[in-house]
Image (cartoon, rainbow, N blue to C red; front, side, top):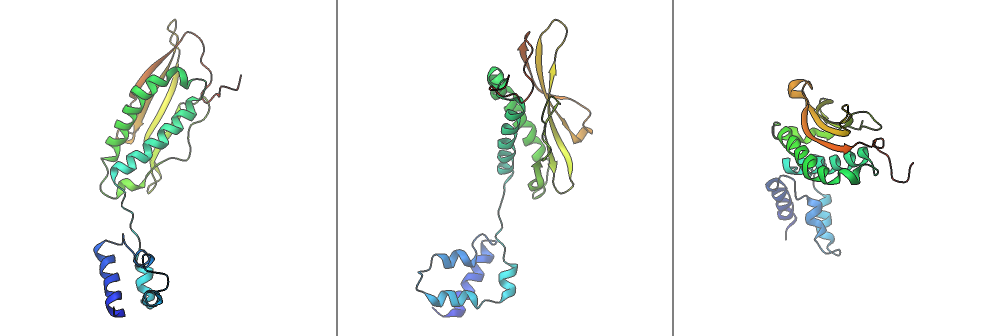
Length: 198
């Protein structure tokens, strides 16, 4: 096949697939002893190679799934090994689905492309403070959704954990309830406590 035809095909395929298939991908399938194809690639203009990017398409569902994976891990670490076994059923059955619902609703408010800037804030909650994690817009650096848990002890009622979130849409004023999980009369361990610690 003539070199000009190979070059044209590489450029055409890259354009048609919006950069998802690059010249490197096409050449990777060529036999090793075909030095002609390597020459063809290296003879492409350098400005073509520099401007060709592999575009990774990330859907809203993928962003939600990634945020939820991190959310589950961080929330589990915040609660800790000593508390989690006793509230595991409520955590899986009530808290995570409502957390996913809130995250999905928030992601769906973003236009195409903008939702890709959403991420878990690096400042996650440790210790007995309320903060579990916040979701921020990496482009602006501002929090958009804040997930918290509070240990409550109303008189004569025992202890419970109040899982809730705040949103930027009301300037973080309202408590949006995820679940109120009853613990019991005995004092729960501190958040983040491990089983092997006393």
